[in-house]
Image (cartoon, rainbow, N blue to C red; front, side, top):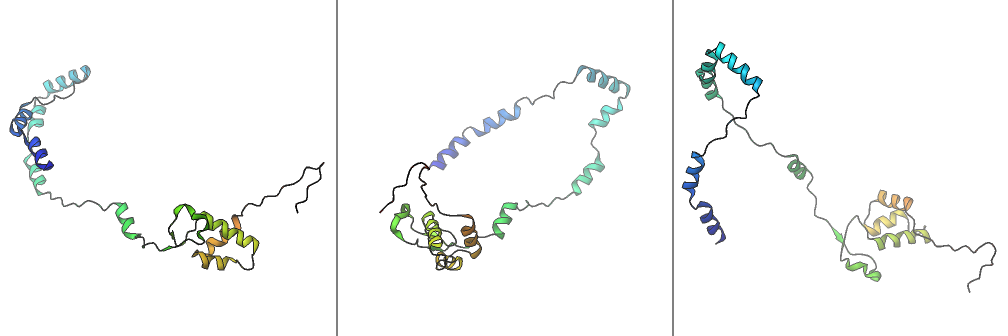
Length: 175
């Protein structure tokens, strides 16, 4: 329904508007610099055949122009080529481990990725039990690449809080 109204408004008085646009004065060329005007006037007066040459149509050039046939196609954009070449596989998801923190309603995690809670858990487990939680076991457990797990264990550590007593005071031993 909206298209019909838009079409009626667009086509309203179309012929009159087209006629008005056709009969309107066309813009004139920009004014020339006075020194250029004088030079052009001198050249036209000394060589009147130039004016005729400018206005004459060259039949040879027109016939050559008629023989030109252009067949072109739009080039394929590089974005389309990249999209076609790198189609992503559908992602596989897994359920998060240990729902004890509720993890802000995280329902599933793509394979090859871990949540913050899982990262802290696996780092802490590796720190406390390095013989049990090896890089290979972590990679299998969380569906990660072995190289990524090695980098994670090498460059990231979980915080460990240590409180040092002041030098002049004795520390109170916890029971």
